[in-house]
Amino acid sequence: MAKIVYVEFDGTQHSVDVAQGATLMEGARNAAIPGIEGDCGGACACSTCHVYVDPDWVARLPGVEPMEEDMLDFAYAPRAGLSRLTCQIEVTDAMDGLVVHLPERQL
Image 1 (spheres, rainbow, N blue to C red):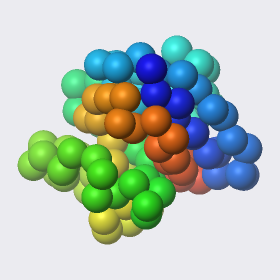
Image 2: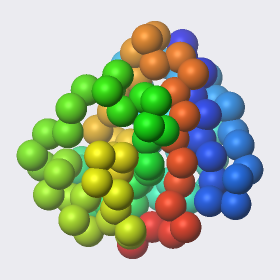
Image 3: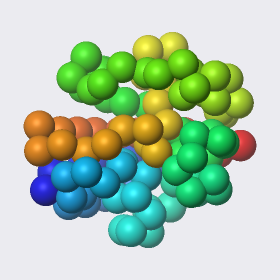
Image 4: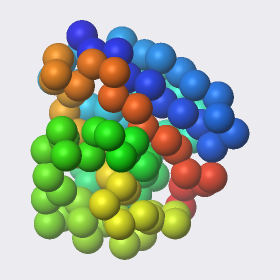
């Protein structure tokens, strides 16, 4: 398990234990985190699970694959180098303490 901190746009923090092998989107959905919609169910076919990765964590996560990069073009207010789709990040124990910030809204 890794403890992931999801920070809503208004600053509300949710600290969630997410099982290794689950995605950040699944962890948010299972914990009913507001603001992570995941309309496509994790197929990387929408951008409704978009977050901003805390800058301290960017280099510690797997890189963005081309399909995710393409879908980020449809995200609300993407930020170069920080925007990620939570359905594309599989949790490992090394991610314990990861902080992600939710955008003001999802598209």
